[in-house]
Image (cartoon, rainbow, N blue to C red; front, side, top):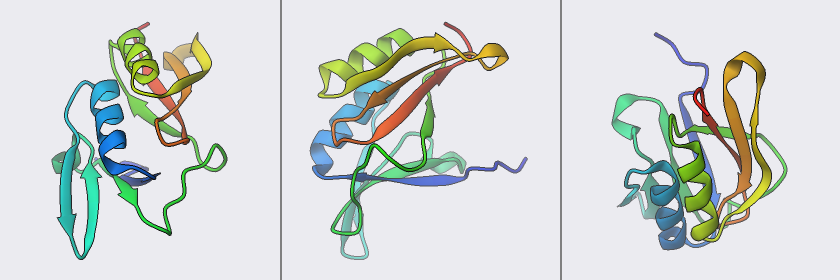
Length: 122
């Protein structure tokens, strides 16, 4: 099956802090890696073809503008929101229904990016 989105690079300022944040929010460990002279954090699911990584460097600037990335936290939206706040994130828009598409919350990550957390179940 083809996916419209196959990968995302999420810009970060502090890789270790971002790995802690995303590991807590997603409920699975992000992996710190290096290659090609760069350090990055692989998000869970990287080995299944649809995932992303945390990228640090002068060409990776966190932002509240630009595309809104949705991360699946299926069945644990409340826990993911709490983990975001606990690990230096903030809630921009609390959990709310999005019609037949489930529920989402829009938060900032520990680095200043705006992201959406999504779950079909409340």
